[in-house]
Picture: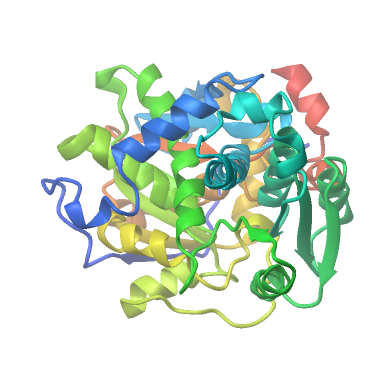
Length: 411
């Protein structure tokens, strides 16, 4: 594999004029969406699940030096519950909350996730079907959660989701159905079939008439921020967060959780998207949720969303400082930089969507004008979220030139 070196990538940067100033506390108006209590409840439940452990927070001093930055922290979600991505925190937790609420309505008592995992209420829960549309990782989490807690599951995949991702979902016992069109078409099909069949939708994106479950999904994601702040000393806390977009759920959850925990010391937030699926960027430009039409064809399939999650947008519209778009080539460069371990850094497996935030950082940090706009420099401590590992192993090896197993063996 050719040694990695910083390169320049065409990109766009849009500062958010509606972002609240750094000295503004987390707004009370946002508490009904994401609150400290909601984050705490999710963290307490998930930390009790079998196999839970905090994922690795890695320092990448070699890469930071090559980009002229003070430090880079990489939160590697590739090992999360063996599912390969951060989505394990959101979808499965939302499945639990739905099932627990249904049991409470029937019996008057809400069971813990441990009770459901042990088979309590098996006959009742087994008659419930959950469903969602997915690019891969969220569906895997929902399918895994359904298997853990004992309900049925139907997952909808759009046309360009790989067979490898489909097979990974089916291994958890879910029924997988293909839908013509893009991710948003699959979302609409899942909602329509759920309505017709009495199923429960566990979507990670909110839209008019569907708000509560996506809140729960985002509450699960908040555990990532808690783990980071539990590990980082106060003098190493990030000045910047570069986080991938998609529908906006992860970005909104981290923005809210860090804002709540750090207050005036919260980092600047830059939300990064593929240039072919830039609904958050265009929403920032237009000052309102904006839909992107077309096939949304991007290598970063997990970020190929054409419509923002409305709840996530409410948070990002006030809490994100900037929006960035990058080409697929920036993601490939980020994957290879991690795999090689720049200037002695530990090699890391980062999937094509999982390195979205890092791809944005590479594009901005190597462009002096963009770096100035986002106040990046030698004193910057940048946090990026490695939201997935090699969840499509064949694609990963084709792009990087090494298999995920080979990279992990070199670490």
